[in-house]
Length: 490
Image (cartoon, rainbow, N blue to C red; front, side):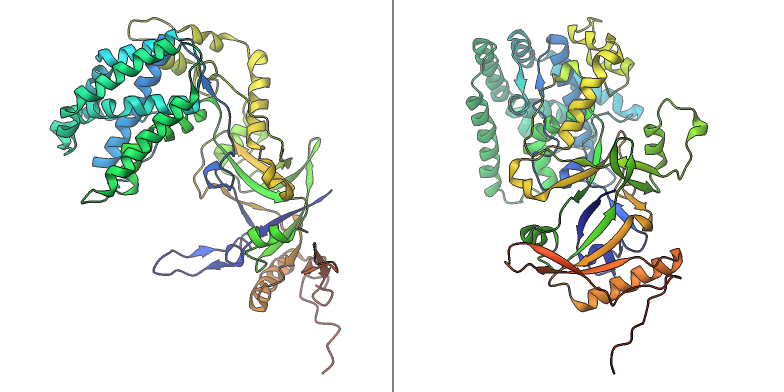
């Protein structure tokens, strides 16, 4: 058994009352909860990064652009007619659209697929037999984006009267001329493109969009920027969720002696550090979690008889040490659609409207023993990689993966007996300490626990590291009540 440390702010642990700006939030000490963050909420932009590339035939590329068109269509509906008008989401597994939308969808996709310039572009990509990086893919999608968006606007204009439609139709000839020009350049580049050119293309589109927005009479909101400017990159970054499951992480550290860590994660030394005792998780150390979403418990026990798991079943999940010398793997997207339904992958991704099947579909027919060990290893590595700049964190993390979870479902609880103690920061206010001791006293009394410990952080004699001393006058009786002996002199 080892100890692991988790830094929290006072507000996180104690909660906050409702204000005009924000709703009330319960404290993590109330129900002994741990929040699992999504990769987008983590502090390293390379969290979960993979050197995904795209090498496929005409069928595979055509279906990728068809998929892009459908997801962009969904974003347009969100923007102009959604229940929360203007608020967009990107769900890479398309929704089941109502029957009234089907004709509009078919019209938009048919327009894109029959466009000679876009067909030339797709054929150039496929015939070049190049391994397209994610960065290059987002540049390609940026090149096609305006034309595809115009076809979607045109299909929906009779229904939604989207005011940008006329402008996009009027400019279409210029868009398609540029796409045709780039298609010819791609064909000449062959299998070895100049990546600097694609960085320049991306930044050119971005700068032009920002420059144009500066002089707009009505400023674009953040969701408009997502739709008109940033959608190609956001879509490219989300594609990994078709290869690998969604994942969420709770972060712990193996040491709490670094002053800079206290400064950043410990609310400038005003925060608190929780000390957890590890449990056994197979050959690893782990943490036992309770009140996990049942959909996660089902996924965790996939393939086992239903009588072997139950609704509120606790699970001991491993604490995995972070690797600060990351190895970024490079899966081929078109060969790695293993996490989605096999029939859907075959019909949607690997077969065109004429019934021609992509050569990339061969990956679907390999046995699990051939593909899953490597696939799973690459996934886990990407979830536990951070750059060397973060090495002083000495981080270990618990990962929830396999199903998409809401923010509420990612707030899970743990047993009070795993919480060994609490360290107050050097600048933690006494008022906060008193509130936390009161909260812990309630748990100690409910669990008849006497061995909980409080510590005070302080600098060592050299003022280099943080150490902590046991607060021996704050202890508990055998029944869990706060011990008031020995009395201080009056």
